[in-house]
Every structure is written in C-alpha cells, then in structure tokens.
Image 1 (cartoon, rainbow, N blue to C red):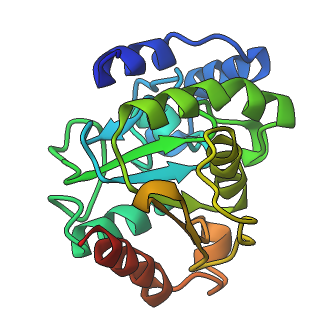
Image 2 (tube, helix red, strand yellow):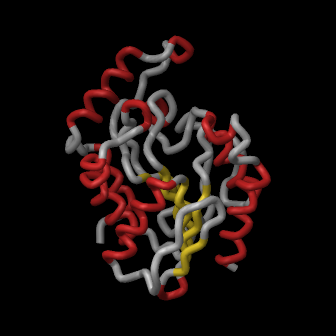
Length: 224
C-alpha cells in the first residue's frame, strides 16, 4: 500500500480536469488584492492530517483564495476558521487557527480530504469533475484507517455514500443528509453529516458554533 505522502504526491500532480486546473492557475496568477504578496499554491490540494487518523473529514473542494492559495486544506479562509476552532476545542488539533501551511498546525487523530481537490469556479464542481476526482477519495479511504467519517455538506455526503455503497459498507438504506445526520456503517464505522462551515451558512445562522461543536462531540463519543 502506498504511503500517505506518496498519495499526496499523486494528488498534487493530477491534471485530469482541464477546467479546474485552468481556473486554479488563473486565480494564482491574478490573486486577490489582499494577498498580492503571496505566491499562490495553484495546484491540487493534498490531504492533510494524521495518516493513522480515526476521524476522517470529507470536505467539498479548496477555496480559490483559501487552500488554493495556501496549499493546505481549509487554511486561510473563513470556513477554516470555523473548522479548526471546532477541532481544537474537541481535541483534534493542537491550535485553533490556520493561517498558512507553515504555522505549526497539527491534527490529532484526525485527517482531512475532499470530494474535489482543485478549487472550482463558484465553488461548484461539475458532476464529471466529482466523478473524476472520486479515485482520490477511494485511495484515501483505503489508506487512512478511520472508523468515523464526517461529511461537510451534501456533496461530500453523497460522495462518501457512493464509496460506501461500492465497498458494501451500508447495512441499510442510507439516511438523508442533514446537520447531525448519522449513518451506521459496517464493522463499527459511522458517517456523520454537518452543514458546511461556509459563509453562506455561518453568516446566515443556518450553522452556529453550538451546532458545529455538537458534531465533533458526537465524533468523540463514537471514537471512545
């Protein structure tokens, strides 16, 4: 079996989706004014965290001026501020903030992957792009020995369920996605669902800190 680093190297070298690769390079060249002095990552963003994690978080895709800039999942944007604060509070991260890939952040018994590893225009990957990137989710599930999975958003939930069905992990009809949704899987595994910590959800109050924290408390309960 390939190592965590070897898988990440393959992800970073991927050129399978021309539209996404062109968009990431364009954003990296044009930049946002606030980040004009940054050298944008502009490549597929690799998995991040503990290779032996029991909790695996599945996100949607890198943000154009977040992970596409920093090169690390959920780093440098508002979604990441919410995620790493919650992870730290639940004991899954050594610090509550994530500014860049050199800020000494470490995940503890936790890793992060995504349904799509390149930033998509308008945060909306196409069905074909999701299907093309599914091989990296497949490889991540094979490599990281997690027993609890957390899908951030409906697209991540559906992406994980496709893999779960293919692996015969679903003992019954799958639950519908919703915040706090739970899907028991075979061999003691569990899938949890949460609204994505995007500004669309957090600014409107659809997702509150209390709601988000409760999902990580549940993950902790399942792991213990």
